[in-house]
Amino acid sequence: MTAAKVIGISRHRLATDGDGVTTLVAFNGCPLRCKYCLNYTCWDPTKGREYTPESLFAEVKIDQLYFLATKGGVTFGGGEPMLQVDFIKEFRALCGPQWQLLAETSLNVPFEKMEALDPVLDGYIVDIKDMNPEIYRAYTGKDNLLTLKNLEWLLQRRGAESIMVRVPHIPDFNTDEAVAQSMERLKVMGVKHFDEFNYIIR
Ligand code: SF4
Image (cartoon, rainbow, N blue to C red):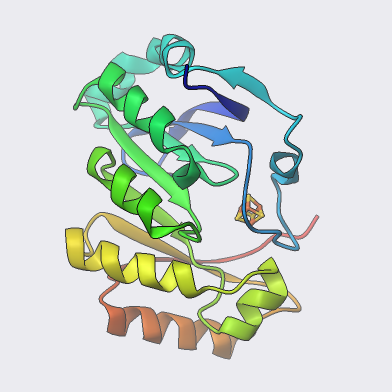
């Protein structure tokens, strides 16, 4: 039986993570350790409530009419949703093709996960952190090689329209200049949709 731990479900989101009305489902488990992570409970494998694709579908389908009327759906976040391949594929089989399913992801996952999950997703919100490998490593504790390879593959495979890249100003880790450089590099790669924003430190 496929199951996953979910640390939070947030309903009736509008224009925050994808088109239309969305429900954000945040999974436990993340390969990164971002210094200003707001969802750090996802680092503790004991945290969260266990769902099967069926039990999650039963809970979130209460908003089906909103999803269908606004072309919205479910945005999977975390934690790292791209690690939940079987769960999300089974969820897609339950909800059918009409719901919009998005992944809010760092893309810092093995390529096999991308290849397996991409066919059932409608788009991505990519939290790129910073394109500079040293800044990325200092901020997340990992290098960004997988992220860059996966983003390149996604852009080639599906084009830029369904990919939004979030480029944060990260206090004490990057500068306005570093953010501008990240955006330039991303534009050269073919990214068209950006969300440039400031991290809020608690
Ligand atoms: S990728 Fe997201 S969930 Fe994971 S550590 Fe960074 S901010 Fe937290």
